[in-house]
Amino acid sequence: MADYAIGDVHACRPALEALLERLRFDPAQDHLWFTGDLVGRGPEPVATLRLLRSLGSAVESVLGNHDLHCLAVAAGAGKPRDDDGLDALWQAHDRDQLIEWLRQRPLMHECSGLGYSLVHAGIPPQWGIDAALGYAAEAQAIIRSTTLPALLANLYGNQPDRWDDQLNGWERLRFIINAFTRMRFCHADGRLDFGCNDAPERAPDHLYPWYAAPGNHLDGNRTTLVTGHWSRLGQRQGPGYITLDTGCLWGGQLTAVRLDCSTPEVTVLDCTMHRHPS
Image (spheres, helix red, strand yellow):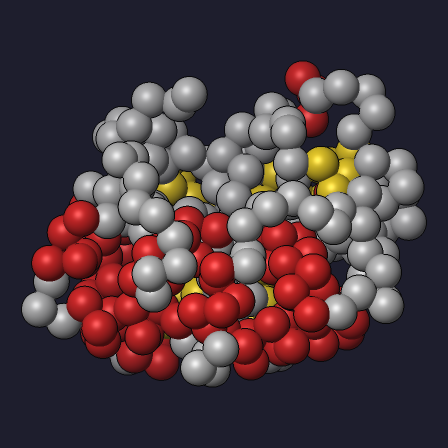
C-alpha cells in the first residue's frame, strides 16, 4: 500500500496516466492525494474527471482556483474564458455528475495517520493548522450547499487582503477561499499579494513566499502542508511544507511524492506543452 501526493494536473490526462503507470499505482491498495486544479486550460477535462471519479475512495483532491472557476461557470456565476479549456465538459453527457463530484472536494484535507495535509495554494501566516481546517470546513459547507451560486457570484476580487477574525459574510468567505486557492506571496504584515507569480528569487524584496512570511506557523506542526498552484516555484520542500506544481500544463513535469516513507520519495514525468506561459 502506498500514498502518493500529485501536483496540478490541469486536465492533462495522458501525463497523469503515464505517471500512474510509472508509480505502478494499484487502486485496490494505493491512495492518491491531489493538490487541486484537476481541470482548467488543459486538453482533456472530461477524461481526467472521469478517470479520477472512477477510482472512488482511492482518490482525494482539494479544490484549486481553476476548479472553482469551473464550478462558477457551471453555476452561471462566472464567465467562460477562451483559454479555460472547459468547452468539452459542457457538452459531456455526464457533466452534472462530474461537476458534482468536483464540488464535493474539500479546500483542505488532513491525510489521517500520514502527518501531511493537502491545500492548493497554502495557508496565510496568521493561521495555524487547526484554525485553517476550521476555516476550510466553514467555506466547504457553503460550496456544498444550495448557496453555492450566490457564493460564486461574490467570490471574485482581491479584497480583503488581510485576515481579521471579525470578517463576516462574503468578505470572510472570499478571503478564506483566496488564501487556500490563489495565494503565493504575503507582505510582512500578513497581507496577501496577488500581483506577483514569479519564483521567490525574482520577486520584489518586500514580498515573502507564503511559507516564509513572518509569523507563519509551519515549523513544528503535527502536519506538513503539501501544495500546488505555483508552477514557477516548482518542487521544493522546507520546514512544514512540500510544493508540487512543476508546470505539467506548460511542458514542465508532473510530480508525485510518496508520503508513507520516512523520507518523501519524489517521482517526475516530463510533459508535453499544452499552453505557453504568459
